[in-house]
Figure 1 (tube, rainbow, N blue to C red):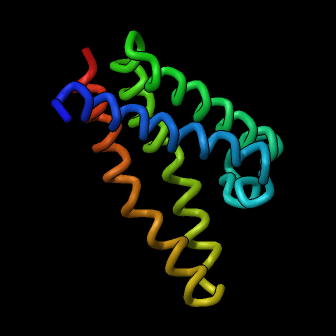
Figure 2: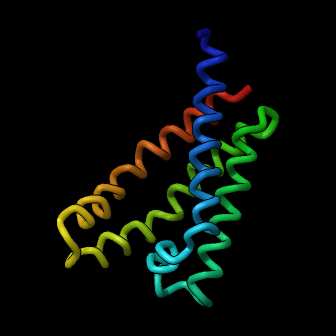
Length: 126
């Protein structure tokens, strides 16, 4: 596989990851509702659906070669913006079973490689 194919596969994998996450916001919104920071105005479900739409839109931007550079930047921004929800989840899970707690806390450092991945997709876009 040459470098172009590798870069394209990485971008399409990122788009698939974002798309799958976006779909789950509609298919199973309740877990997302629970991690919407209370400081945000309005109903948590509105934020759940809005973030799902954002993930689907960013997935489409990353998937399309003409918008991939912008999509990669938007994906990095999206991963950064949802970080407070992951922090809230980790804090809310302090009293949960060890496995659930480990998953919640484990999500926090995973945002860094996701941001790096998105920025690499942006840099490698033509």
